[in-house]
Image 1: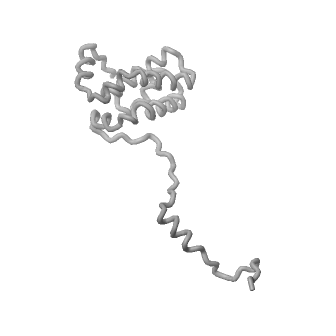
Image 2: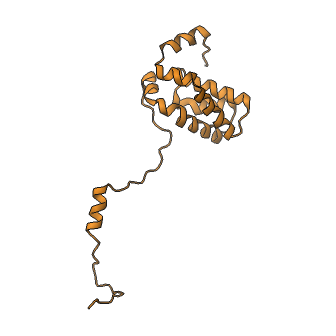
Image 3: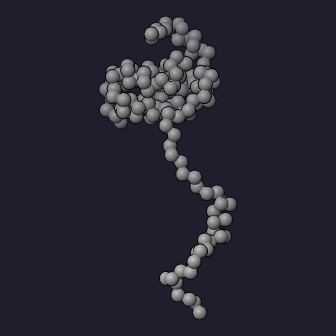
Length: 148
């Protein structure tokens, strides 16, 4: 069941927020990120407002960040793939920069929904080890001519 909050209740919640989250909540940059993400995926004005409302709900502690994608999909009627793409963009540019403050607000650890695959690059010590020890062939190479 969706709880409706009065303007007075929202004002009290805003007063108790950490300064960092207040700044993001009222920031013009936040509005631009939401607008640009929606524009990028062809979302109409009415849905942009609904998505912005849900971003605000996350920032003030009324909607778990992990429920954000599902909620915007339900409230806007967007297909799952589109809701996921918009949620990822908003997570990246709005929620991630204030991740510590959100974790403190919700008293949870926020983990990315999908971890990018990482390729481990060798450290400089590992790279020099490889250069110092060239592989030695186990048998005589029939394609090499002798130098002598």
